[in-house]
Image (tube, rainbow, N blue to C red; front, side, top):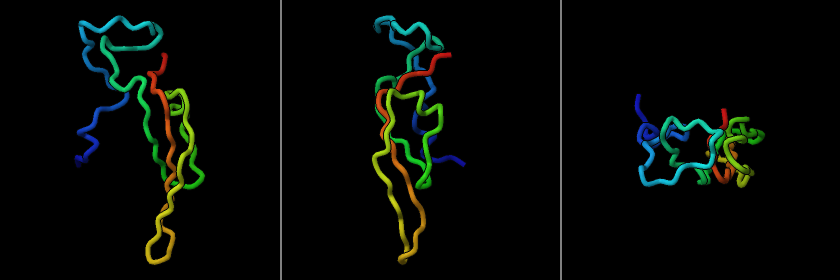
Length: 96
């Protein structure tokens, strides 16, 4: 089954490095001969559950991560689901 996620690039994917791009000063990261288009960007991480925390790899992939919202959905007055939203700033690839 395909979803909209098939259309979006993944954070761990690399694209061909531009021949005009300056060389990276990060020699301790794995680059697969390309560049990661998400480095330096921020993202929202959304997980199910009121008490959910971030997994280790997500914490290490960003300079900082902080909870910014807790959303509870209700239907006919009954609690259905809780979502916790984190703001993750400055993505960086993980060193090997």
